[in-house]
Image (cartoon, rainbow, N blue to C red):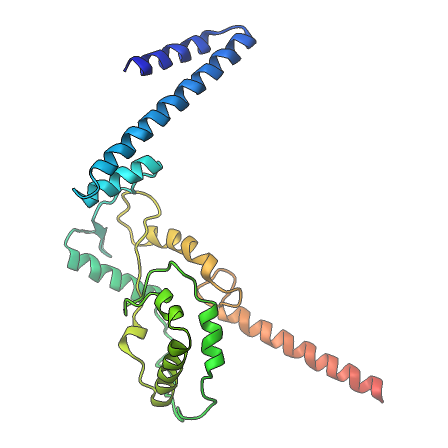
Length: 251
């Protein structure tokens, strides 16, 4: 406390200083004292963390976040229903999220076309799977199968052969495993304490934008399927025009 009072007194003296040199001198001293106090506090917190490593993992995580200077986002644990009622039960909240996602990705173009001749087309090659493995990033959370990418990469050629066979089996049979049909959504609030579904999605979009390819269309700003169709028509028109020019020149 004496150290804190000393720093506060120095800050007050700095505020009252009329001379530029005096102000700079006090400012330098205040910063030095603050840095020393911060280092002392960090050392004290780290010592406490080391002493309580095996006591309470939740408290340990909280202390580490405090030392890192990161504050946890406030959560209400509630969500608003479609009609504005506050939902508190876990099952009701999950149902509301399911309802919101279904409305968000609703497609009114009718039922999907039936898939026929599923056995036609080229087989999936090991080189294709190998190339996909090279693009896999480490340190990512595993999917529903709980298999981290590091494990798959470590298996090398054994994994490549197994995955290639699995993919060809899925392709030939048309039976997609249930785990591959699952989409996992993590609700990240745009602002602390929000209870609106759409106040989560904008921040989520910022998180996934770096992972989305430049060629991804639909559900992206200025990249609807209409844009893709127009781009394809323009490219084909340009190709046709180039062919006609070459034909005219040859004549």
